[in-house]
Image (tube, rainbow, N blue to C red):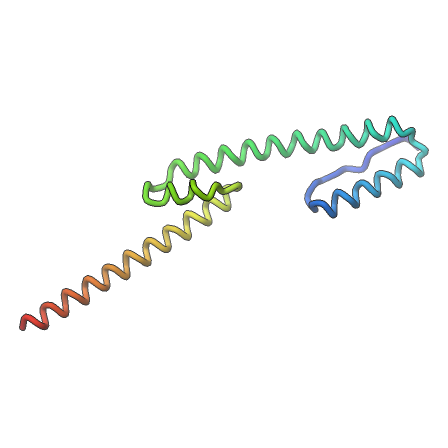
Length: 124
């Protein structure tokens, strides 16, 4: 048997990493792989994952920055201050803030309309 590392997808957090390490140890034990080769294979596999994650984060950060830069001034600062990590987070926050601003605008408009109606009734 040759020393062959299992693919590590990195999608299941710490539990997935622990399970992957246990499986790697089992495969290396069963295959009789030398310790120095085990370290090489495991290191190489994790290095590839780290490179993939770094690229993903860099791309995602650029997307978030570009999206935020195009927001209206009245919500731009609020979204920036939360420092969203993903584009989805930035979009969700911006949508929530816009909904809140629209609700506030509608309430003010309705209040002003009521006040105007009350004033015109009082003047009659």
